[in-house]
Length: 288
Image: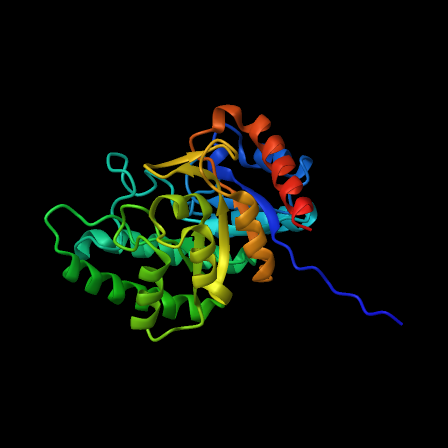
């Protein structure tokens, strides 16, 4: 009698921020039609308004739709102008108290929506250092606000996936792990890794970043980049070693969502949704 080994592999998904010219239902149609098993849903225009009067009913309807389609979901909170029509990604968790409360309220609502949807996690980030602010003071504010969000996540049974971002106060996986440590290593605090970011800022590259995240990895974003610029590129057009990335994920037995994130490519979404899963499937077959 021979034993069998169950292969753990990522669930491939596509981000709705790369389908911004499609209504949400049509975006899900495109994702489902091309064989993905998950979607990374960016809250805000044009897909799901987190502050609409009927947000809970909207979330319940979406939950039922996702279940019927067989799609897992992770919530992304990186809508560019979701809180301020004039300032990209502001206010953030590093801003002064009055402004930062808008971001905290938005993230609390994201956690509430994630609970309704049964999402894998809520992905979030620190934000850039506000002009004139000192890094030490901003870090203190970040720890304080994240401690409140961890408590909220715990109350709702939701995981957080903290994402290091080039140019932000928390820029690398090491920075995110430091933040988690200062929060007391709460189990609700996981890590999101964007594979393209690793090309730009991670000292150990994509393999080092993924291994540093280890079993805290709850969300993976898939895109290519070049070392000199934080610009999401089509797979195969940058410097990312995609085979190495997915081989490392396999060795880590990562079974969470790995969603393509191309927020500047909505104009070519049908082609890229199709070509991206073909390339990722080829990679996973090649590495066995």
